[in-house]
Image 1 (tube, rainbow, N blue to C red):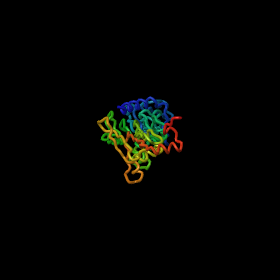
Image 2 (image 1 turned 30 degrees about the horizontal axis):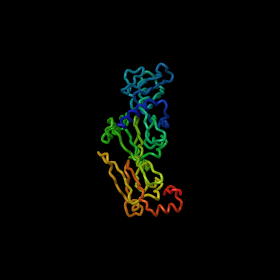
Image 3 (image 1 turned 45 degrees about the horizontal axis):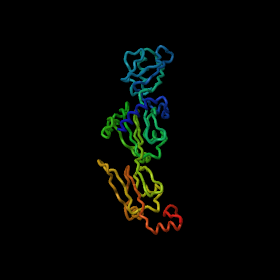
Image 4 (image 1 turned 90 degrees about the vertical axis):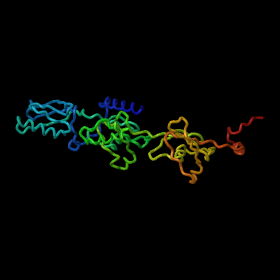
Length: 323
């Protein structure tokens, strides 16, 4: 339900903020190879022939333009400026001797921006002006925050207009069924290691969601109880206790309880572990799961311990009445 609302809001926001976003730095036109699409606006200038000039022409929904002095419409969709310019030159060669043509795309409206959300430092829409991959776009968004769980989900909201059709259709088998939008999961660790399969090309309209790390909670006799995040690769019990700055001297380390959610039941599963034995290496450490609650109980105190506290001056241990 929450993911459904997120997707609807993300798409709405990305379209409403296009004019206020910073575009991905463009490359040289020859390297960029921008492919024209429906909605793009084109201008055409014919050197010395102002009657042939076209100030602004919008590519129609079928990717077609109709230029002056030509009975045959031209297919502009998925052509570069240079490729379409060559076709205009060919069409006007019937009327002009060696026409000198300059064709430019003045407005690139055919591709919605990529939206980057979740645990990144600068979330928001990013208009694509060239070919880009996942790692570059994550870097462009300022990188991930310390709350990132190391998992990135990419939603493909529309098929690539001029790219490999399989870039979208192959994702359907991995869709999670939310709004029937195909998606795939990627590991941030694999992305940083430079594995090609973890650094896919990103297309216009894609939504990139850097997921927040799942929380666990440490309570009881630890120095700093509270919420911790499970990093990529998992979180063992000993590391969680260390993140809580360790146990207090009153902790009962022989019986630490882990409360774990149980599917279909309001009552959690209780896992009792001997933390002292884990620290000695005689018992295997326990890997925590999302939303686990680790409770470190207080050990039962003997009278001699109370007496020792009184002797060394520990306050608020044994109430003493004044005579």
